[in-house]
Length: 183
Image (tube, rainbow, N blue to C red; front, side, top):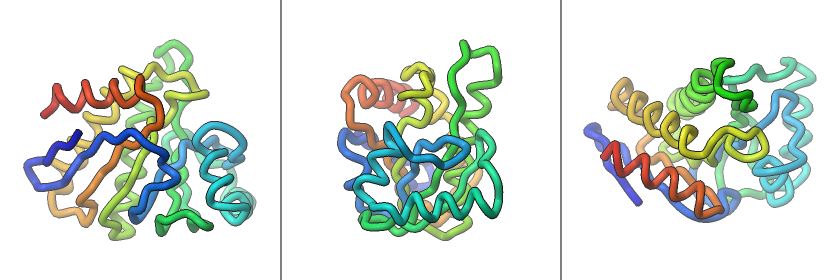
């Protein structure tokens, strides 16, 4: 599914393996210590190789833990992208601890980092909706609103293609439904 924003930026919902995306940056659904053991993070390191974890460890060693809603950037190892943007989303705790706001920050800061790095394309997984437990429909709503807000605020951004790439149909379906409402 694809939508073009008023400023011409393309937003796509795709079913597939994010580690196979060929784009400027893929986003990793990371934890604050950038310990990439399971979920999307584990898959990224398995396909991209140990260099991603080594760079992540060095980043945390130098800068400390990545706060929820913030990002860190490493090289891609053997992946087909140019960079991995490690975005720390919130753990779902029932929705009463600013989880929506924290997820919005994780998405926004990933887009802003790509913008500042002058990247043209970025692929996201559904940050926080896996092992962090964020409800998929709510996650999709936060993502789509944040992306539309970004496109509106930065219509001339070098970021021209935003992909929402997930491997499982329930997540893809939630994102398609939300993008369909917005478009």
